[in-house]
Length: 473
Image (cartoon, rainbow, N blue to C red; front, side, top):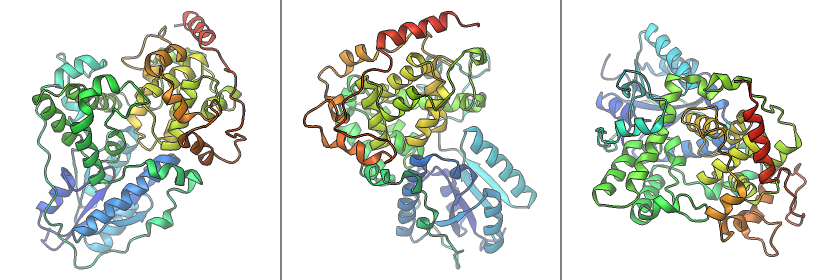
């Protein structure tokens, strides 16, 4: 390999300059670096909101590279085909990228690495999307963890390398390959009119992510233990959006949390624990990839969940018209902002899978279409945890009662008022914005009467318990 041949840095979910193993390694070769983002087979499969949000992240990252004197090359097509094409056009003899761990990305990357090596091209992958490589975290008997708490205890004091600063300079090639225009890709087209409503709620890019982390550690972490359960309070870091696109590294977040712990900030350890919950999801996706597509506990294959998405109660759940205000508020929050408070996620998932006895795959798929912080491993594990079919799951008899959850976590009604218009004489702007985001084919208006419950909380719980107690496994 000559010093003049460029290295292709294949950009994926690592839209940052700092603590970026593949980018740093490429720069350290001393050769020209060509950052390349591919709208490939994995990206094309994303839902509406994740694809829209990814596109905006790519746009901002391209601007950050331009400020360094580099640029982001955009191409569309199958990953291997595009890489071979750019290699042929530039004479590149190496491709570097940061590893991903969900089954779909792993299958693509395994194929690409083998093919490039057969072509005589150096193909190297680097860590950075997680704190710990999944195969390095083992139980005392050498297996993988199936329960979260023992895993947390095992890694809580484990060393995590300090974040690496952004490179001072990214060497540019003498001639840049041609690039697509991001706007021509139409990554936000599936959002339709909802894009304009959702966009102001996004926090895009590395600089914004670092600001978000700094504000959390300075002002919110002290009350995190309590406030993270209150959906009407801005008490969480909201960094899931940025972590999923790699706009900030988990190591950067971890070290901020550890500094907070050293300074005696209450809530800092819980923040670190939540980072490891994300690790747990990928730990399981690596060792048991079926978690993203099938029941993790295989005996749940026999449970008679409803799998028909066309049913009226499923449509009501998606539209935030179940008649249970806490459930509906959470579903509408997601449709407007692309995110949902974690307490809401647990309640709406429990309601769909237990009160309505619908398959968790229906909910997982809907979230995959609506969340800007969609993460393939966390989304799958969260739904299976709620349904009872997954690891570390809530016991089948634990059915979240939306009415009692209101008493615990939204007693003053502020969260419900923020997101539901029909129950109030002077609805909030956020509640009204929902009707600007939804498809025009949904015949809904803020002037409608609020619906009666499709399934009462107590009735749904009784029905769920009967179904679980009579299951055949």
